[in-house]
Amino acid sequence: MAPPCFAADEIVMLPIASAMSMPDAQQKLGHSVRFYFGMQPPTRITRTYGNFVANPKTNAFARSADKACEWAFLSALIALQSHADELGANAVINITSYYRKHEVSSQTEYECHKGFLMAGVALRGDVVRLADH
Image 1 (cartoon, helix red, strand yellow):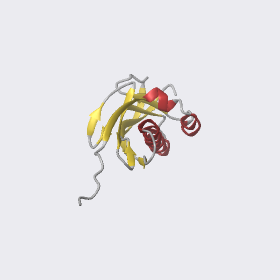
Image 2 (tube, one colour; image 1 turned 120 degrees about the horizontal axis):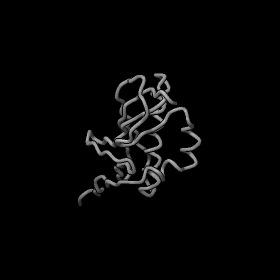
Image 3 (cartoon, rainbow, N blue to C red; image 1 turned 180 degrees about the vertical axis):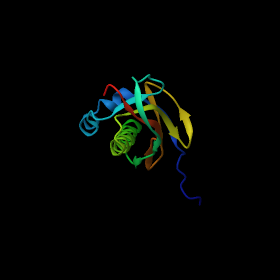
Image 4 (cartoon, rainbow, N blue to C red; image 1 turned 90 degrees about the vertical axis):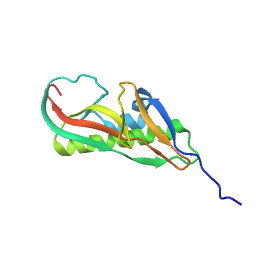
């Protein structure tokens, strides 16, 4: 008898706005760091601190893809924000999905990989200080 087999990752594209409007996102992210997705043009950059990747995983067992992915996305933003705060930056720009080093750039959606037990979102962005923030 063969052992049970679980499906590979399901790749889903989900709206950034839905995750950003979650009450937990509003509470945990605050306003100290701005996030610019895809090629959204930020205002004048006064200092660049480099590129950073956040790649959190979250429990996906018995959760919908949307809910598990929203939590993973929020965790990635919190990691980006924390890194920016540590460096004295006030924005993360050019944020792209970057799961397994495969880049997907969008101003409206992020990529999530959901398996049987885990969901993951990888985000990469440039940590900067903006003049008008």
